[in-house]
Image: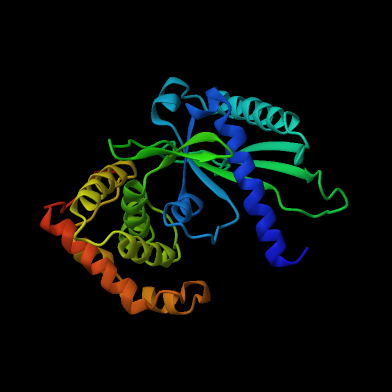
Length: 290
C-alpha cells in the first residue's frame, strides 16, 4: 500500500469511525468533533489529516467530572459502538482488533485540562493480508464553553455527528495561535512551543471561503473567539499581541512545505484583516487572571 492508498484508507476508516460513534446515543452527548478533518469538510477540501479531533461536551463533563469515570466510559462505549457498527455491515468492511483509551498528558494538568487519546485498531476485512495499518486516533480535548453558533451536524454514512461550525473553528484557530506565543507560555509557566503557523494558513483558507464582508459569519466567529480565549485563559491586549516575534513565525511558515498553497504574504494579510475586524467590534483587550 503506497502513501496515497494509505491516506485513502485512513480517510475511509475515519468516516466509518465517525458514523459508528454517531450511532451511539451516549457518545453523541459526550463528544463534539472539530479540528482539521472537520475544517476540510466545511471547506469541501478533500485533503484530510490522519487523526480526528474532538472536545468533551461541557455539560457531559460537568455531570461526570472524575477522569477515571470518564476514561471507563470511553473505553466501554467506544469499543461497543465501533464493534456493533461493523458487525451490522454486510459485507463487513472492518473488524476491530483493539480499542485503547489513555489520559494525556499522563501527569495531571495544573488546571485539570486533561483529556483523552482514543486509538481504534482495525483489520481490513476486504484486504485481510494488509498489515501495518495505522490506528484511527481520536484526540478528545478538555471541555470548553461553547456559544450559540458553535455546533452543527454532519452526516457520515447516514449518521449525524455533532461537529464544530466553521464559525467556532475560525475563533479557535485565532485562539490556538495565541497559545503558542511567548506571552501565553510565560503566563501558564509552560515551555517553548513552536509557532502554530498552520493556524495562520487555515485562517487564510477560511477567509477565502468567507470574506470579511460576510458580517453574519464573522460576528458569530468573534463571539466564539472570545469564549475560546476565556476557556483557556488566553489574554490578548490587541492586534499587536498576534505579532510577537513575527519574524520567527514567518520563518516557520515559509519553511513548511505543506503550507505553500497559500503564500505567507496572503496569510499575514488575512490575519490583519480578521484582527482589524475584531478590533472594530471592540473585542480587545481580553484578560483572564491565572
